[in-house]
Length: 377
Image (cartoon, rainbow, N blue to C red; front, side, top):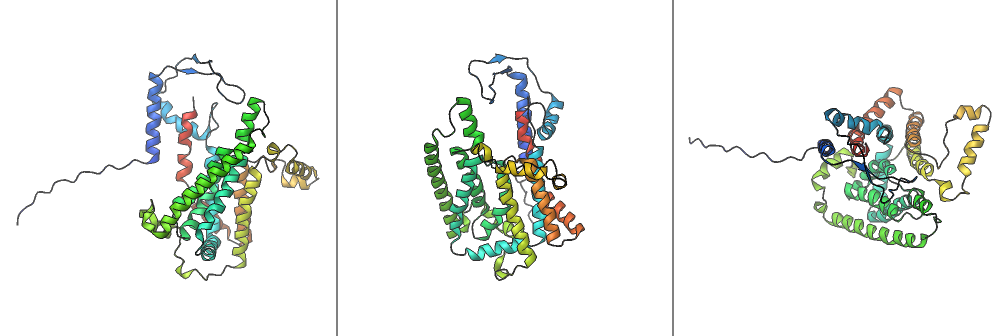
């Protein structure tokens, strides 16, 4: 037998994880602090840079300890940034909430129902959902709050025959073209108008036209991509993950088309939908859109003034319109507990489901603080 010399195969380059890439960037930026002279501009109350106010300041070179401390401050914050702890905890609690909902199988059967209902007219979901997200972005700057919708929409879009990129595009593109136009967004148009001492209503017509045009173009783009996948699934840019996605989200609906939901499962789905509705209502800054829209603030104040009942509800109750990550995180945690009681779930099952759900979402909360590092100074 001839002994053939085996040439060692070259190792293929493997892209490092997002964690490694971001940490390498942190190291690179730390090195730059030794090379680039430090300086700063003065800013106004709104945080905008004032022209011609640049001045040199004492250098603050970052060492090895600073590099490893930076991700910690990226999570918990310091004097220069709030950190990502509120967003990271929000993501974890959403994971726990979805873990509890998935334990009831209500979402699986609900998705099966949607798939059956929209069989043959799946693409109508794209314009409907993108318009809703665009309105959220245009009215109150919907951004990080959309995180909750990705795990909800991804299995639905895969189930009706598209891929997860369609779901991501619906949420991300839809909300951000809305933010781009910002017709009445108080966090963009409102701040800018206040800085320039003009009415937020100035130029609203042009912003509405911009919103309509950008939303229409975005819908057309996503619609065409979805149509291409519908005709040939291999055209998906994530086709190599298709089978794994079907298994992950349990989306083999051959035997589920006729699945009937129990009364408890229907109640869970109603609570599931109500949770997202309350989140949206709570995040819209009603009194900043219109100074006369103070109903929620007045109602909350009246509710807390009622003897015994006000104390029972809690003095820290924040009215709709003033919510942020603390409040919506509390909402998802509270609704998970309510679902446990409605579905008559055992305490041990609830805890296991909640923790397992959090575990599935653990990667993103740990990744989120790293970009915050670049806001530290």
